[in-house]
Amino acid sequence: MKTDQLINLLSTNLEPVKRGETKKTLTWTILAGGLAAVCLMLATVGLRPGGSWFLSGYLLLKLLFMLILIGAGAALLAKLVSPGQDGRKLYTVILLAFLAIGSAGVCALVLGPPAARDQMMMGSLLK
View 1 (cartoon, rainbow, N blue to C red):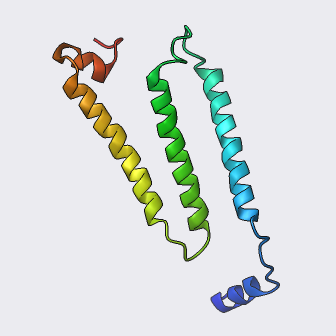
View 2 (view 1 turned 90 degrees about the horizontal axis):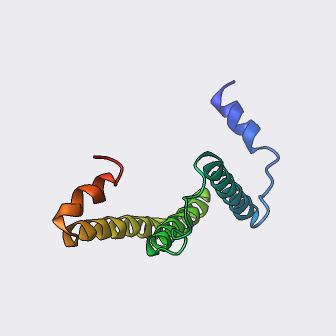
View 3 (view 1 turned 135 degrees about the vertical axis):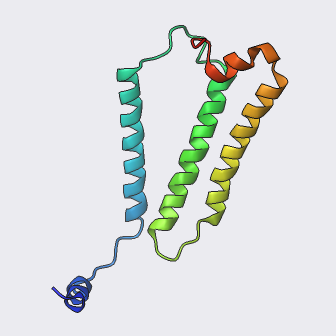
């Protein structure tokens, strides 16, 4: 098959995509993937022992970071699915989220006690 024949074959019987169909499909795919990831994590690793992890401030920061990335990534993907869309602002949001988390980590290392830096970087189980 030649290129011209392929172009003619693909351009016949074109029908417009229903308005909002791409967004709906993308939303359901992200929700199904998130649910599958949570179920897989619970099946393989399980929850942490003890209930204090639920109320810790670090959990809220982790969830906030994750939700910012998921939201910005999904919005960016929805924009880039359609030709001619510009997603530079969303790239900036993703970059700023990573810079904020990285800066918070560096601040925690600098402001923390020097004796605890090894434990902060490597964890409490590694010695």
